[in-house]
Length: 230
Length: 127
Image (cartoon, rainbow over all chains, first blue to last red; front, top):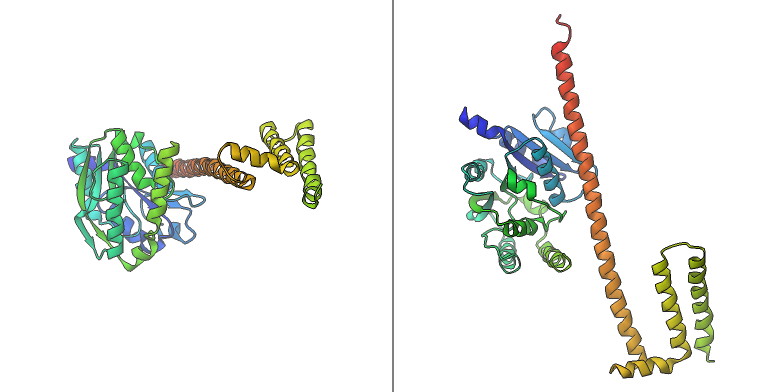
């Protein structure tokens, strides 16, 4: 009873763009553990919404594609409107493991921290391509220098926020630079954060769908430009 | 007057008059049009008196007048690029906020509708 009460105020936000291939499996696996799932369909042009019929969940739809950061912010705001106490963000492409969710939620429920960040380098990154690993490590170094926050994985989509942290979170970077932006805000607002080891599964699909490593340059540029112009 | 001046000056004069007319008719942003007028005016001076640009260039340690114009162009372009980038970012975030409001409104509307349907279902005539 205590456990189910604790799960009732946890919302899992899944931003999805043209993920009809995996979305049903991903959502079903999450729903098996937590009852409240919010999928933000970020202007998909495939039959994403149709794949979700019959499942008990909230589906929000951006009429046009605005990027993952924008979709996350929409889902988080919706979860807050639904009185969520803990909000977890989860990727739609199947690279995350629903079994890791509880490990992220627990420290927040216990009041240990405001934000729990998944880390593939504390946990296991399965079949991670060498180039991707190198780029991610560079990203970690960049974050240490620019944001002055020490984390072992800067671009992991699996994160949990307390209501307080989620309320003050403001993602303005619509596209991929939001990961750095979230870390900046954690640092600036002095939220207590904790890194939790999680599994990441690199499949042929997630590799094809995911970011090109060259995008890291664009992200670095956006972060620096934002810093200069404020 | 040389050939270049003969071709360039009427063209610049035309652009200057166009800007002037626009201000008189009160169309467009006054600041932008004023900036335009200043640019056309200084362009015509530079065409008529090339020596003047050379003198100004020498004054601040640049060898040729053409170099001075080039540097000013580069600076102007950088400024414009910066200005438009910021403006674009602002518009992007406004569009996102609009899209977000749509998504939230639709989701909340769907939900209250399905809640209403549930109530009518349970209150409906029992057969």
